[in-house]
Image (cartoon, helix red, strand yellow):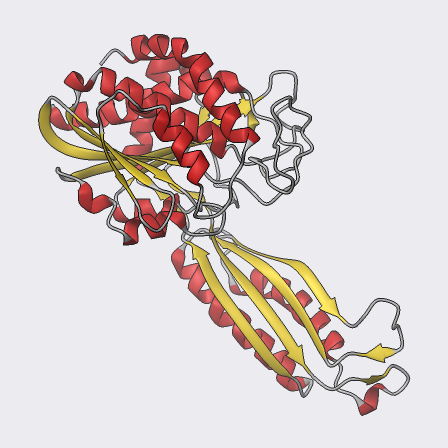
Length: 403
């Protein structure tokens, strides 16, 4: 497959892909049920004659693109869901639904997926195997990838599973620049929620109460000491407390009965995630007991780390350079702390996840509003190249195996 020619062909897709992206952006849907989003995507595949399996429980679809010759199966994926966020980007096609916004670029991912499927179907005679394309809901905290796997999405493969690939737009890279790395690419995530239960009282007589606020303060700082003293600096751990509640505003002289906090946890290895749970439970319970308090501790693992297979990451780099030149590829020196449930797919099928820059050219990638910001903006011009690249990963992997 001539990858540069594929990218040139995809350039003609800009307007239809832009239309798909903006339609989805105007009407964002969140969670596992995205009926209008999925309908818009599938309508864009009409006429291709492809086998499509829809879920009865969630808004997902598996689209099969068969090749002219039998062979292995490559899995591609695009997520579709938006965030519960009010949009303030100022885009002319901004969200029409208050409190919902495509601030992470999944609207672009949907359009990229449509473009990739059209390219694969157009050149299916060059496929030495097949491609399963997964349109996935619920990436933003609803474990949509796990839901699709539980429903048997990968079991639809007719050939041996030979690789899984996905792309994700980012605002901190110039438009059209691809980036990835072997090994850990993104963090695994978990949530830690704690409620301390004591006995309230008057602030002038703390000896007559059991103060949960004081213990909570010790725990919050103790968690940071735990990170620096119980974990290897070369296998990083992040624990960030996102909210704290203890007492009522204005009641400065009242010791409350309870105090609570919630934290997000990020690690880059499954072992560290297990240890964070163990150590944080010990720390919280120990401090609570020392203060005569009871502690309710809820530790929930959300996603595993995104771990790129080295061979597939090398393939992703070669494809980017062959298609667009070395100046359009930026090797990543370290992983990022964001989390992605594509990790669940990579756990089943070795592959690679790749970032692609989508920062509007009038903005500086170093200061542009980041993914998940209510001000986030993405440049549509990346759509054809990203679609061609995603298709090229499948062509290249199957060609590699075909010899």
